[in-house]
Amino acid sequence: MRQSSLTPENYEKLSLFIEAHSKETDGLMPILHEAQNIFGYIPLEVQKFISSRTGISVARIHGVVTFYSQFSTTPKGEHVVGVCLGTACYVKGSQAILDKIKAELGIEPDQTTADGKFSLVATRCIGACGLAPVMTVDDEVYGKVTLKQIDDIFKKYNDE
Ligand code: FES
Image (cartoon, rainbow, N blue to C red):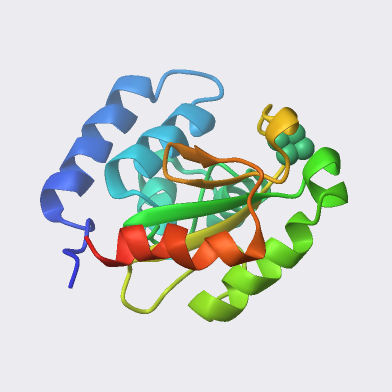
């Protein structure tokens, strides 16, 4: 089981960052970036903490966190699996690849498997259209992916 990142030390780190940036007119974005970096996600508990330290309403913080895809309200898995749904990949069948991965992992995009091993995201173009359809696992890019290959790709990460 993974350790929770919601430790007193991490709250202390965020607290120091907020103090250092409290004078900025719009310090919310940097604070949220820092929170995402420190905790790996920004659950309601952390949103409330930021609200209490900045005076910004939880509603506003929640709105910003859920609007920007770089922020997440749930913990990311050990591996983040991305499937590109940009036009070039979509035309080459990336939806079927996403559907297969969804079925295999039993999760929807922006969710994490119960064992914390994988998170799934549907991405926009990642600039590798020549390799369409493209999927990624963490920083690794897999091009011209076929449905058959998916099991092999996952095997590599499941066997770790
Ligand atoms: S559309 Fe998928 S990499 Fe560009």
